[in-house]
Length: 156
Image 1 (tube, rainbow, N blue to C red):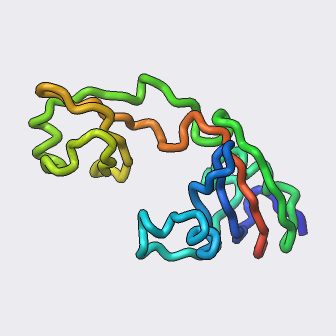
Image 2 (image 1 turned 180 degrees about the vertical axis):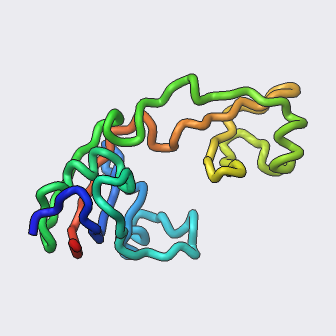
């Protein structure tokens, strides 16, 4: 049965940047080989289950899944416009250092650190200057062309 909008699917996946570097996977062995366990040793690896046509998958991955069947594998390249969008300066904001120190603590206010807002958004501290902090709210994969190896484990 070919996947259509409204189907629930379970997939194994490995996501790579254009240079081939793995940034995410559902397979523990791939994560070990790529050194991803160093960043999050407690992470669990399991297939991803979601509904097609509801926005659970990024657009490019969802488009690739449509028409695939259980047991089928494939590789899809997803440009930013159907992935996580283009990186934009509009998503970079400047805050008063005191305001962010209150919310996140001084430890997290260093360049390159990631913070999570109350609504779950993850942002990167780009620059800490006299009295201000420059924070990037673009998705960490914004502007990237991504390649996903996918294997459809089940369709219902």
